Image (cartoon, rainbow, N blue to C red; front, side):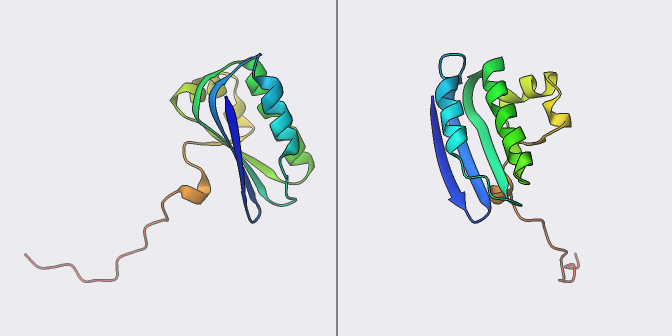
Length: 120
């Protein structure tokens, strides 16, 4: 298990990899406690490379969610195939911003075409 943290302006990203379970969650919680939570900013928790997530791992995410919202920040949870099912079963997608790609790496919206169609 590892947690890599990066900050870009008002966005703090924590990218987790490996197994997040009762044995590794103390390290996850410690890393989450050190995360900067910018008021009015966003905390991104990227779980796409997590290979296993149990309820103790979700508890750490929920604690960070409460910390972020108390600090007037928002939390975005980025889920992959392994984590999305558990997040949906626990209905966390109803209270958190759950996505499959973080906003800062999402493709920009396509702009309307201004060129004329080519006749055939």
